[in-house]
Amino acid sequence: MKGKKSFVFLLAVLLVISLAACGGSSGGDATAPPADDSSALIVVGFSQVGAESDWRTANTQSMKDTFVEANGYKLIFDDAQQKQENQITAIRNFIQQEVDYIVLAPVTETGWDTVLQEAKDAGIPVIIVDRMIDVSDDSLYTAWVGSDFRKEGDKAAAWIVDNFKDKEVNIVHIQGTIGSSAQIGRTAGLEDAVAKNSNLKIIAQQSGEFTQAKGQEVMESVLKQNDKIDVVYCENDNEAFGVIDALEAAGKTYGKDGDIKIISFDATNAGLTDTLSGKINYNVECNPLHGPRVEKIIKQLEGGQTPDKKAYVDEAAFDANTITQADIDARAY
Image (tube, rainbow, N blue to C red):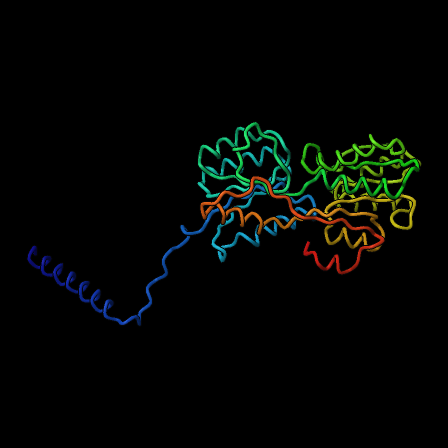
């Protein structure tokens, strides 16, 4: 039996060698199974604030469209649902998963030092997008891409000053998520203008949380307490949509031909459409298409280059008196 088993084993070995030789002399006619090249993909972990606005949805889509396998990436996406604790958990999960890069769209400016130190200790570069963060050590993040929110606020406030001149102006201020860079910058622009112009007065100030529902709720409450309103300063388009709903329900005239002027930010497609129709008087752009900009930074890092620490995007502003359909068509968001 032992000799028979040895003979069978020898035949099996010879057969394997024969098949290998046949495969080697196939002249390329046989196709080898594809190798698993997933390890060659650059893995990007992206923690997004949430999906609270049309702007945010466009921002998310820009990232998803950019970081695809066809471009050499694997994207791990996490929706924080507007909670910082969820973002901190997501970043720690990215670290455990040993991603190559972490991209963070922070819900608020502060409270990031500890978790970003953990990412730094793990050797993972962190790229901040949209809102800025306030940390004790700038080396905790590699680069930031986003908007100059203070400049946006200054543009909007300048429109009020230029259009009302010396007239008394009662302003309702619908703020964004308190503590976010967008809220801080846009609020600062308005408050600075009010401090410098005695005819401007903020008669109500409350957060609309960057959502249409909350914007409408706040405006409905304000209308019950204030008869004379000249301007509603909304810190994004979705809040403006809610304000419009509240004004229409209350029978108030607004916009280009109405008594109450509406200021908005983001310049989304829907927001600009309302600007063209005269519902919104002035809309300051906030470009959400950050995907290609983040990819540029990653490519620089992959090539051993040092990217700029901060990169501001170019943005315009649109007046209901001068906006055209071409302005809207030129923007994919």
